Length: 210
Image 1 (cartoon, rainbow, N blue to C red):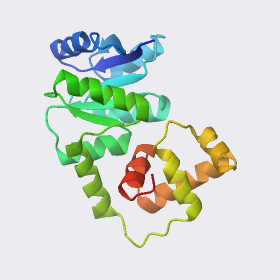
Image 2: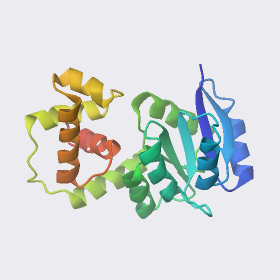
Image 3: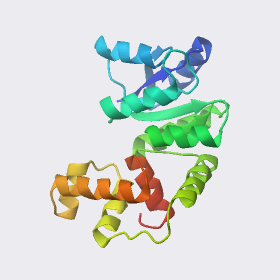
Image 4: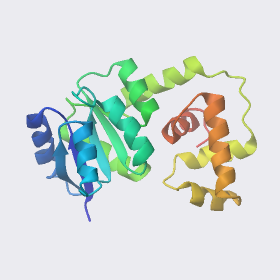
């Protein structure tokens, strides 16, 4: 069964072009397009199908990508969000990832790059091309104190953040309660000044915990 995608972009020609490209991929299909975040929420509230992945433009009127991904993180956290932009500005990348985006891609990417990004996003829960990863890692280096103490159990939890396991499944692996796992997550987010599991996963990979 194909993974379902919604494209959110105020440029309808771009949205329709993306729909045509993605519908030629073997494993993905676009089920509808939206003009902005408010249009997306309206469709959710009218019982339109909830997709597996959202391709989200950043610069949009009424409700932009930053506001939309924050809403999705709070209300639809299981949806994977790929941010789309014309430029890879550091400020935009960091803000979208901090707000909950699980992937980031430039609009001038080749269709093969898009298909690869969607495949890896679907498999791993997140995907960033090398240029975006460098920006994220650089931001982590600027903001994280090398003397931060991370316990062995927190390191074990970090190892699982890069998997597709949900928190209950991670708790089973760690032989503890889901509430304890959530405590590890909250403590690490506070220590590392992160907001999302994606941020924790990136930190885990960069620092050799995964």
